[in-house]
Length: 599
Image (tube, rainbow, N blue to C red; front, side):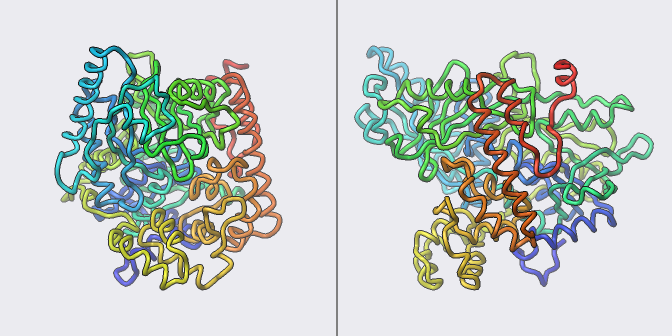
């Protein structure tokens, strides 16, 4: 638990000193719950367990949100298509979570985004049927979210004529639409939400360490009592044991690996996880004229066109993936597919020259009988394949809190004693407390700190009420008040803050996750690497050799990623992408059986 004399913000700082102290704790103490995985579910589980007064540790092999949780469509949503599949309980659950995030838990990170459902041009009877069918679905969406009250967090839907639709989205081809329905969902910077979750867990006493890879389980008889961990920032050191009464593996598409570590005793997980690749394109806001997003149906998936600051995000694909899970590669075929789908409704077709960035992520889907990944369940499951080990997998980003509560409920039951119920539905994340008042008074905050209102708004929408700490850094070190080289929408202070308070250890952590420079700029962060390395180096004590190594690793990754996106298919794209070395010294995270097949 947090020392009452220490502020919540200070207790939640993931600084270099804090990492050293937390690793020492992991060596010396026994925990009630040890969480493996620093994605949204793992970080959410750490928050849930810590909020119940349990002694918690969290380890992550790479960086917070470095897998699936930083590569989504950036939506907090109920999933309109799940209504069509009659998964009503899943829609209701997700919309409830959307309302909590937007109004109470993280209003600084989750905000409404308008989205149009275009109604295709057709005969009068067909248009009437389509408007009625889609209108009923969107109306049900609003009903499940709660039609009235502040708790829903989003405005209600509205029907639009063809002229009304093209007024909101002038780039829509007039011959392709007969009207539209506008509804709202939540938009989020997924990686930043995960960082806030991890910091919130740390503020309540959880020990948190990234670059800490689990290499095996510690067992006594037929019970898991801890894990073996290798500190990837100290490659010369031997793995050490972390003892825990319960181990929770929230490892997403790596879930099957956890059971393989126990293969010598014949453990079977109870479920299998399949990876579905989702690719997204990023284009400048000027490439498409519109004031709302789009949701389009395709033959194999749902396509979103979403406003993202000065950009548009276009995605996603939905294809089976069995190659490198750490760096899933987008191929030229993926990119062409997305361009073809979106160009069918745009008056000015997009080309590859319009693309600023591309990113790909893997959804962890529970395997079922269906062949298509788009039909696999988005439900989650919690199983205990061996005493002391709980696996949680499946689900969707929006319902991370429900998944976390479910797995910690199981942990509490097996720990015995009086079990406190989950209270994370009432626990604002760091930066959320007082956000509405801070946003209302943003002009005064700007005047007090001698910066523009635009700077304060930018910081508030990324850090909430923690903005005051960045402003204080800028006042103390004026060199941090300047824009970052190659990415003027970000400030140098944000890089320093990422290293000193948000657990960033490497250049990629900042350029890809603490900021989104790696896909928001045509140079993919290459023009920002030197300046970023200089700032991080001062915060983390890097010498010139380390700074150069970090820049070289990052640039090699950018080159490999660009090359992969010119390859014709998954196999060749994957081969190109894994050519760049991992700065954390990890080998390509490929499935052994595929390597054997290739041989």
